[in-house]
Image (cartoon, rainbow, N blue to C red; front, side, top):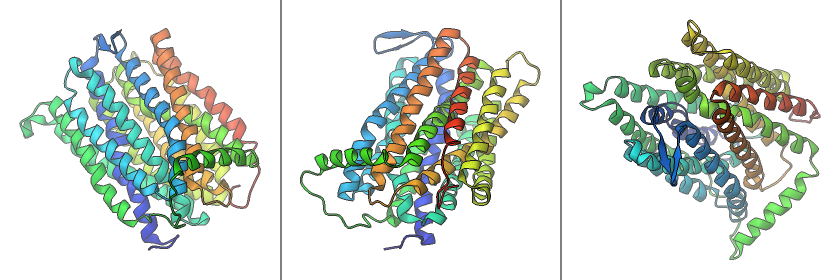
Length: 431
């Protein structure tokens, strides 16, 4: 078995980002939201016996619901995984659920089958985010504290690189479908299948490298109830770690903004700014490429100036993104160029803030074997934040009929996050 800190173990762990990030990019951010917007544009959609005049609001609410499910499930699952030493089994299950659900989006081909798109969007989201709970929990078990910033950044860099490769392949199919003897819509649907196969296929490399249980725990018959007891114990322990508690509050507030912007950016460009699909795709690609640079750059900034200062810089940049997006209007001349600039700014801090918050939280953890249980709090914090963020975004859009106010409202959460994280005290590993 590979030992903690071994380069092959860290690379194997980080490679799961290469496998699963195609979901984040192609399904959550790029191809599927634009495909959904194209299918439902100007139409009233029926779902659960209700008529939806704003299909984008339905999509936003569906994402909120999926994150609510994950937020409810992950503390139970990770508590059980910690107590039985079965993180890898749970990670494998949710990886399979996510990839099969993504491939099922192939059958969403018209307004009449919107229910397929919505239902499997929910299942794919549950599969992806639940597997991430266990993936994140492995970080303290594969990398030493001084390696964790670099290891976390490496994962995001692998993820951005892999997802860009598949997205480019998908775009060639979608933009030149006649070369393949298919329609553009069929090319998008084939892309969903390719994402599922890529995800579950490359994940096998990670599963071969990761240890089953470095603490050699033996499962007991009542491990489900033990899982609940473990959760209660960790919840009580959190009260004794003021830095950890404050960091989680700050992380909650910034996640409302970060994840909502990532999830709704393509819909904003398509529906609010009415940009052509190609402009949106170019922007999304730009974000991914700049994010690789951003993740690497900020891992070094954190090494030199400290995690907290690096995170503060990213939060301030995210606030600028919100104000810049609010100022954009579809009637502006060269609005596409401004959107590219916004994408570049967003890309610089997108990978950085996700990478830094993950490694900072890992460093703040007390000495414990319950990594999955602690990371479940991190994960639940993020998911509840997304539920709130996507709900507020959808609600403000339905009230004002403009997404600009939705985006501006997110700046308030970034400001609150900045204030809270400024109260953190320096520690041995975090300063």
